[in-house]
Image (tube, rainbow, N blue to C red):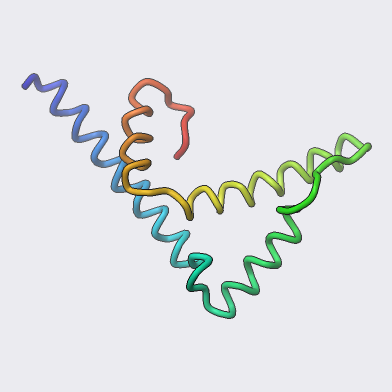
Length: 104
């Protein structure tokens, strides 16, 4: 195996560990739907309302619309991080070899 391959594999492994640690931190903070504490449920419910998790972000004022979309993006990020499997993390780390703008 060439040194470049070894380095690329080590880099992917490191990214996978970082992403898994990040996902685990999100899970520790927000909990999973099936086993949240009362405090986590309270915070997640508040964020869902604030971030418009269950309603349209459309506003006629472009600035208000952009603000609502930004809040919604935060909600989506939290939920995506909570749902990531180990396999998805590995795949995302591999995708990043060719695309530095992917999830992470």
